[in-house]
Image (tube, rainbow, N blue to C red; front, top):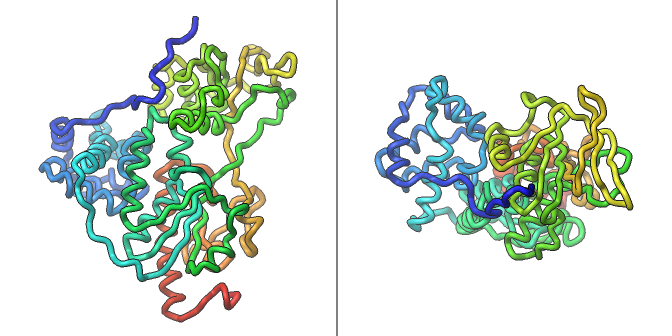
Length: 444
């Protein structure tokens, strides 16, 4: 019997109201040595902003958050709070940890809803920086540098900015209007965002330096999904999860028709993988009308990479799981996939499927590196960077960060590295301005 389709794009987890947020904030013990702050990758001012919410100072709370984060409404929704700040809360031992993510989300949503004004920003006289890619790393770089007086232009290949936030994370977890409003706040800092421009075909790093930029940041992410090299891999119906999620996001935004989304009504779907992308793909497939969805994982349940909250949500949605099942070959008929043969403790089993979604990781594309001299990568194609100035590649003035350097990670971990790279860019540009050097013209 087909699963009852869920509402595809409505946000699943609802936020706190004002009274609920204040009541929750009052539970904070305001520890002298706040471990929650230690658990946050970007060391957000957690006790401080929670204290301001408890006092009803919502603007002050938002201001404290944005000292560290340019994407509070995003982080409040999709960060791994259960593994980071909330798990470090002293009340977590009693199972009563403060709902830090919900409070961060509340402060950001309240600020937007009330139309509170932003702090004044400095004039853009410190230097010019180009940012390639508008995912979490690129947006963090842009926001941080704009706040300290840099003129920043972001170049995005897609028709809309946001990267994985817009085209990877499903709308039921992260509504796209939330992403758009966070981006609009970054633009309000004086950042220019240019879309439908792909590095490589449309412009090169050398072009950007010729346009007068002092430094360039590469934050293009991991654009190429990994293949599963098994017999039958050429069968129709074997699809990359990130492609499915992107097409689903475009459909939800009205930019694609339903027929362009590869999972059809009534499909039996297998998802190979055990990470958050696998959970996103599985839950999205159900929401768009799949008859059944089963996640196939090589590992046992206790070793899955996905967050427990995402797993619990998948179970609630009706997703089935095949644990400790190693894919052996794709099964098909007439050129189309009909199933997947897996090895389990009981021997080989065949799982039926109309579509199989692959969620086994991704690797960087080489469009930028192949069109730019002097940028070295490792054997897997990830860009090599230096510690001083932090994040600079082997090409002077060119910096990189996020998944293109550190392999696919969470939103907040990409932000953590990007903040350090922003400091490296600022130090580098200040130095060449002080010395009066044009590194690109000098060829050093």
